[in-house]
Length: 578
Image 1: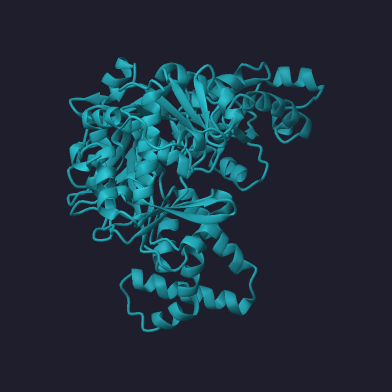
Image 2: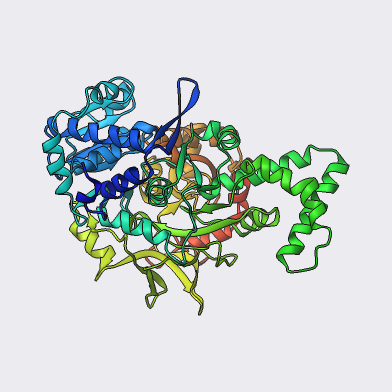
């Protein structure tokens, strides 16, 4: 197959052209059989085309949806491109999704087939036909291409405007919404990232990828942008092996959500706290030299601080070759951002959505400003609505939500995506996110959590009168809970006023049973990890409720900030007054 016969604004056309150009160069490092292995662009191309050929022979027609439900792997990426090479539409599903969520996605997408990691996930995608990576995939790729003419016709027919993938994201109702991205959305947005005022990625860059490919951030920014740049991708074994994988891969570029960077910073400070007083003093002295550099002050001792402390620290955190980190998927705190710049690690904060094919705004190597998400990438236009909502017009803007015209019309207006985020734009184009228009929670790990169904689920128990779920920009979700004290006393036999019971172990145990019942049917990322009992309900007089008795989330979170912080610090806290 001549790559030039496949449209270059399709994901497959882009891949085939790069494979033709780069040939025997390494595309992927992947872990298999207890060791790291490599596969070239040419060999990857052969696997993709073999899979596309097999899918065509299995009856997959252009436009048919094919799901992938598995952890990150070489097979995942080969399957993604193979589906699209056959003219199909990739439907990623998180491997830790609940049975209910998986069933909703399979039903809504009308997937005809699903690639899955193992038998457990095969059962979850039923009645959809499952092909197991751990059993069936190798057999599927054996024997070479058997119908080259049919495959060539399918490849030549690929249209940049055609649907390429449906990525499901949580809506305000908790029902998954399928973001429709055409081939051109992914290709144009990937090229946009590498434009003149974008990221300076090179063919000799090596990126370590660990974010789930079921999310657009990891899949587009790790895989497709790397594909566009012609670089090499290391597929990490997962979060539990990430520190070791960083030392092995020694990446030049790495993309992550803020939670990883927060953990890196915490690990550094924890190690320092356990060191001798002399080493602690040396570390803080070196850190101060880095801060002086950021402030633009003279730093004659910085080379010494770098040689003794900062350079070894960078090597331990990044492997020693890193040019920059990219942070997205959730807000990056100023403290974490400044820490990395202080020790000499460039971290570039950006912003985007599934609906915009990932990042459309970012700080870059050439243009950076603290406490912002950067400037619009090439070909991206931004504007603010009257209420401050950020509207984005980007090459990657979605076609709409699959089989959901009302939600599409609400979010996509005249080519502009209504993002739901409130922001400020400086005169020179730097964007600062100041608020979220919707109540959708976005954890520090980049996962979306819809609070209303969780709160309703908790309040379905007679022992709970009201619940407010929080977790935005946090590692996990917690709750402020107002019990029905009369019912709680009846069930437990406790006596006394609420103020005396908020930290009672028996009272907490009764509420914990309600929380456990709710958590059983939730995905791991959205389970309520802790809660604080409140003695009194919220009130309109205190400014915590609207006239229609809806909770004012921001007011409540500010008023109970101490109790919330205590939960994230691992301390049980009872709040007795407003």
